[in-house]
Length: 418
Ligand code: SF4
Image (cartoon, rainbow, N blue to C red):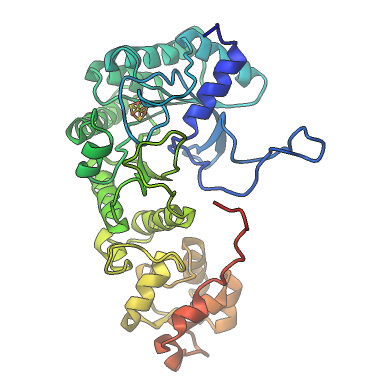
């Protein structure tokens, strides 16, 4: 194979990175830039590779160059297009090349940071050294102050992983699969114990760096945007309840900022142990909603699991909060003029903003149904679960067909949708 040009390497390594969902631009569908009216391709697709988006602690959305250092890999994870036995075109950047590309794109205002991962070349330590070296060049030689997210390798020497945290804003280690048995079957070179050990060490380093910063102004920063992880959904037989349970243990045990869920997508030349079809994308969406319930709505993992069916799967036609409310109708209706904030957050159709507005408004006067309608997006969804000074749902809350009334109308499927 002849020498690849930078643009060819960029094409291969940005495309190879798109399967990692650990930044926030996954989950969209439908728009594709290929085949525009003049054969030149359209613009504005959110499905392409190369740039992803993350959210800064102040809520700003930032664009990141998202690439792999290399898609060569000595591991053979069945679900991964870059695995040793996969028949894909391979490419490799040096740390200097990635640093130069990042700076060139940054100066053109294309990106504000870098999301860098890698296949494992030679050894875990060698690969981790290359990732750290890229971040070092950016920070120390180019004085780059932008956002850097580095994937770390759990099998690497902890000192190298520590170095990564000194340069990066965020570090992440993928747990990959929700169950240890799934990991053993589909990623035979990886070990759940090593992955969780590396997460525990990173958590301790983050806590220690924060404490030191309080005491010494010049103490080094360590991954100030925390650590995150990714779980692949639908590649093994794990149920949604398994996934929710695992995510909750990870949040509690390692203080993760985010768990990302990535619906498994069949890859070219796939291993025979994988399913032939991807799970519905809506399953990934329902898992993100359940994650939201645990992080912002005060639901315990066991309560989210109660929203699932006997098979441990969350319903796809309605969101998990509505599913829970329909199962526990005796908790409703709630009087919006008296219920606590925690109780109001359980009402389907009331988000955090709406609940805050209701609590602020009821300090001044008792709320009527019209008042609540003005403060919410869809009063139709809220009505069966609340009382106001002029409204009681009476038998509506207990209607046998309430689920059908509240489920979003099914959309006509696209003929050629996956
Ligand atoms: S370690 Fe596994 S998941 Fe990571 S690049 Fe190699 S084969 Fe893919």
